[in-house]
Length: 135
Image (tube, rainbow, N blue to C red; front, side, top):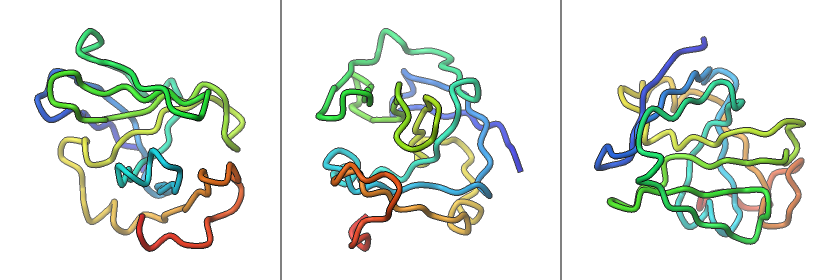
C-alpha cells in the first residue's frame, strides 16, 4: 500500500516527504558506502520524493559511483537519502531513502517487507552478493 511519510535528519534541519509502498520491497547493498552506513533503504521514483526544507543544510559526498550523490546534513551528519541520476538496474533515476529517517515508520511493516540484496561492490546490480549477513 502506497503511504506518504515525512522524514528528517537527526537535528531536523533537513525534512522531506516521500510516498512509499513497502510491499514492493526494501534494499540492502554491499557497496563500500552502503555497507559502512548499514544503509537500509527503499528506492522511490523522483516524483515520489519532495525535499521540504534544508537544502542549504546539506553537504554532498561523491564516492566511486559517478551516478550516486550522497547528501548529508552538515549539522548532525545524518545521511537521510541518496540521489541516483542514472539507473543501476532500474531503468530510471531514483532516490534511495534511509528508512530509519522516516517519521512514524511502521517497523512491523518494514520488517515484513521483502529485502533485496544488491551486489554494488562488484557493480553487479542484477545479482545478490555472495554474503549479506553483515548488511
